[in-house]
Image (cartoon, rainbow, N blue to C red; front, top):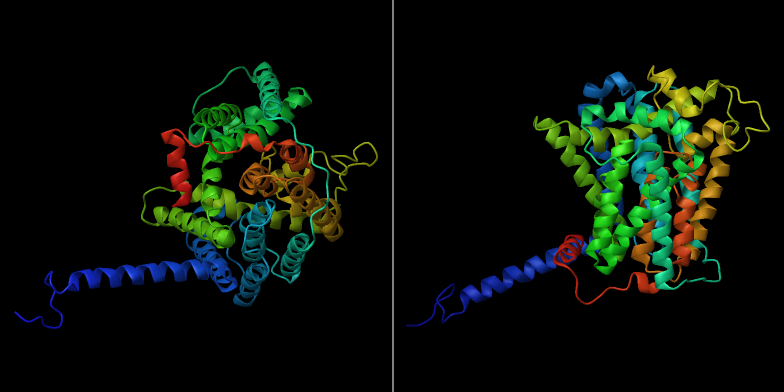
Length: 476
C-alpha cells in the first residue's frame, strides 16, 4: 500500500518524526529560557516582576490584615511610581553571574532591604512629602556604591590554610565551648515552640540573655549564624549526612531557646542557594525568581483561605516589615537627636540621649511595647546614628568588608564560600552592621573561610542517599 502524507504507521516513521520535532522544540524553549535568564533583559524582567507582585500583595493582603502594625496605603500614584522606579533601577547593574561569594550578601540586601525600603515607607508613612523619596534615593545610591567593589580586582592576600583535621577540630572545639556556655545559662532544651508562643519565648530569652555573661550572647550568635550553617554547608558539598544532621540538630536546639524562626529555615536557605548556584551564569535571575515564586505562593495560600502563616513569615516578617522599620527609623530620627553610637562603641565617650537602645525606642514609639526589639537593617541603623553621613560611612565600611571577604575566599570553593556567608547576610537585613560583624558572626565567617582547607569540601565519589537527594533538589 502506498504511503500518504501524514501517515502515522510504523513504516512511515510519522510518530517518530512528530516526537522528535516536539522534543527539539522543548529543548529550544528550555535553551531560550536559560539564555534569557542569563541576560540583562531577563534580570530586569524578573526584578520588575518581583516588585509588581510585592506591591499587589502589599495592598491586597498586608494592608487589610496587618494594618494595625502600621502597614498603610496612603501614597499618591506619582510617589508610588517613583518608588517602583527606584526599586527597579539596581537591576540595571546588579551582577547576573556568580563570580564572588559576597554577591549573595548583595542580592539579599536587594530582595529583603532595598526593595521594601523603597516601597513600604512611601506607602505607609504619615509623611507624604518628598522626604521618604529622597531617603529611598539615598539608599539606592548607597547600594550602588557597594556594588562598585565588583569592578575592583581582589586584594593579593597571603593565604593561610590549615590542615583538614585541624580545621575540623577547631569547629568541634568552638561548638563544644558554645554549647557549654548556652547550656550553663539556659539548660538543655530541645522542643518545638508553637507559633502563638513565639514572642513569649523571645521575651523570656531576652530577659535571660540580659542577665547572662556577654560570652553567652556571642556563643549563641556565632553558633546559630555561622558554625552550624557552615557545618551543614560542608555536609551538603562533601555529601556527609552526619554533618548535615549535626548542623540541623544544633539549629533546632538554639531555636528551642531563642524562638528565632530563621534557625528553622537555615537548612532550606542553604538548599535554595545551592539550587540558584546550579547555574553560575544565571545566579541572579534564579535567586530572585525562586524568591518571587515563594513570595507569590505564600500570598496565594492566604487568598484561597488555606493559611495565613506563610504570608506572615515571608510576606510580612521577612520582607515588608524591614521596609516599614526602615521608614520608622527615618521618620523618628529625622526629628529627634541622632544616637552617634552612644549606645555602642562610643558609650564611654558620649552622652547617649535616650534611656534605651534604638530598637527598643522604635518598638515603644511605634508598636507601643517597650519590650519590642524592633531591629532594622544596616542602613536604617546608620541613619539613626549619623543621618545621611552615617549611610555613606557604613556603606563604605560594608563595601570594604565584602571586598576583603572575597579576597580571603579567592582560593576557596565559591559555592561553599557563598553558603558560609548566607546567614550573616540574612542578619544584615535585620540588624546593624557592627552587630552582624561581631555578635552575629560575620567576622567569624570571614576568618573561618580564610583558614578553610580544600580537603574539607572535596566531594567523595560515593555519598548517602539523603545527600544525593539534596543535591538532586539543588539541580532541579
